[in-house]
Image 1: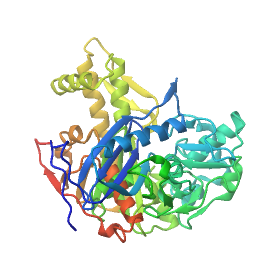
Image 2: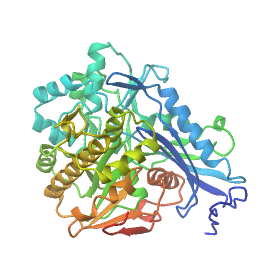
Image 3: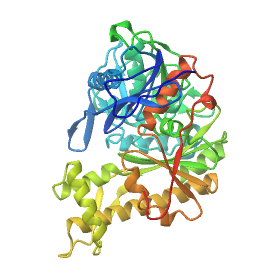
Image 4: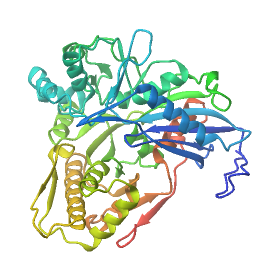
Length: 467
């Protein structure tokens, strides 16, 4: 394979092989797209803010804006790659956020964000009606307002929604690219209406939520060719093989090369997710994990399952910054410097349930922005230790911890002392989610037979005092 990598800094003189791969990663904060050669090396990328409409605690997105942003990012990522064509496109996204479609297949109403609090009462009812352990044994999760079906039940009852079809965000983007409606298995696993052992939709839960039995489409696997990109998308994208890549955290793991049994991904962005690959669990193991508030889902890797633990991260730090009037990245950097020199001075920061209301205790005259920032980081460190302990209770000791995401470098500076015998790594990848998605696009295009053939990136070791 004769592939010439783009040389850094030579944006005006790019030499490319005839085919490139494109990955799209629609995250809670940013929508990213990146182009890669067939050996997994990045050639161009773009990142745009994911647009939300915020009213109090409510967070909604216009589905058409989500697609337009993803397409804009994709076109920007390939605009300098002259003389090349995209042969494969893969798409991953945040989970749980559902796009509602009308009978014509058009978006009908806003998509409610996964971290929107609506659905709390319905989640409680889910546990009462179906039994918490039964629900966990079927879905791999404890009932929660985060799950799609709880929010959809809320909308069905409060807003009288009547829509024939729902798609995850990634699957909505795929549908808009190639005209085919399908649901990738790892994203289906996060709806609360998918039975992870059997791979079938749970019809009784869908009916309970006021949805039709066919509300969600057929389930496909990551990297499965579902269609070809419309020629209307323009030169460079039209005709490319299109595949869903799945739940962004799991796709990040693949893009970063974190696929071994003894490896744990720590994806640090708006939320912090610890992800571990598992062999097939039984119903008792699904319940045991869910009791520890861990989620078990189908992985984007064939014949593998994923164990996930999570907490608020960037969302928490941004909320703390807003309390002291800091909203931009430069301000966050100043807070980081102040926090490194400060003591919490009795301040304690907590978050209800990992993603709920922010609580601050111990405010005295000694409180300061730096002290508050330090207290927030200490809360995140406590949360990380608890998450990893719960993960290892279920899946055994981890040997390698791999950090990715927008907050990875900051997180790396605070973890080494807590690692014990575990080794800490940073993958040499800028956009692991987009990279993983692109590789699944390559699988759909016939470049790779399966994920085992994906090129793995190099890892850089992190030791105490570095990061």
